[in-house]
Length: 342
Image 1: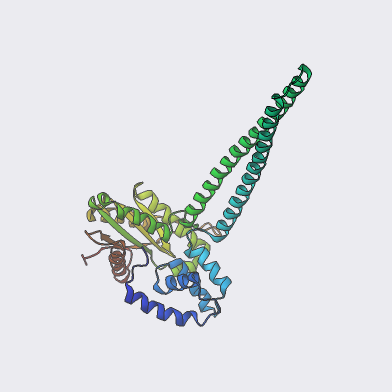
Image 2 (image 1 turned 90 degrees about the vertical axis):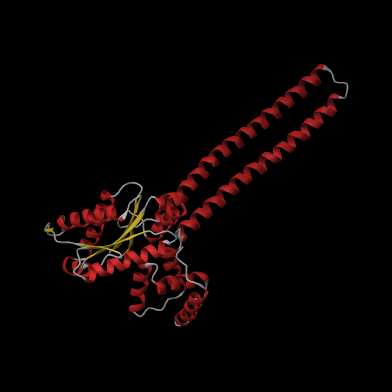
């Protein structure tokens, strides 16, 4: 969904990226290209922020640096998590294979024993010989039953292990879509949910609006009160957004001080009302500093609103809401602007 440039545009991007990548020691691998692509096109704010700091400091990006950037900001599942899960699955499969191989071996031995007993029964046996044969058959049968019970127990334990690995994979995937600072969706999570919404035409027909939200003068907040307080502001705003929307709506932090809210089954009037409630609630709020316990107020946000139109993509909606946000930011801040109503 992010990579919607046409052939000509993507070709031009490729030409520019090759020049940039050539100035760094990392190999020309697909992950390297993906990192530079998302950084250069600006579609991954978190990556752009982290990578921009590295480049500004003069760092040269080697394979290790690219791998870390790709794992943290591009890959849907952390590479370390993938590696651990693969190792766990391989160990589990090896364990199951070992038990089934041993059980199979014992089954063949049991089959051979049964054939031997069958051949023996064709002979003229006295009572004592028949008794010994029956005892041997009972012993082999018990041994085979025990082997099958062990296998069944191991398979049951393996089933539970598989379920545990599945839950871990689901958890890792969820973490990859979640912003760790706020607990709401990150940009990738937002794109995933938006894509699901855009597949459901019924939802679109009932109305869909997007709020783009940016914290006013956030750099000044960080410079004045410190980054810990800045993080607290971001968490407080995320919590406010969650409290002001319904369960079917989508709340995400796109990166830095920028948020997005998708309002399902909502027209432009309803979206404007929701946006103003959010804006006024944040303006009235106060946040306590951890060091001095001082209550800091006057924090404000700017909002841009766009309504989905038939045939438009999520990128169209993002672009329109972003343009409306730009107007809010450049005409005084702490205000809400609806796209097309300036």
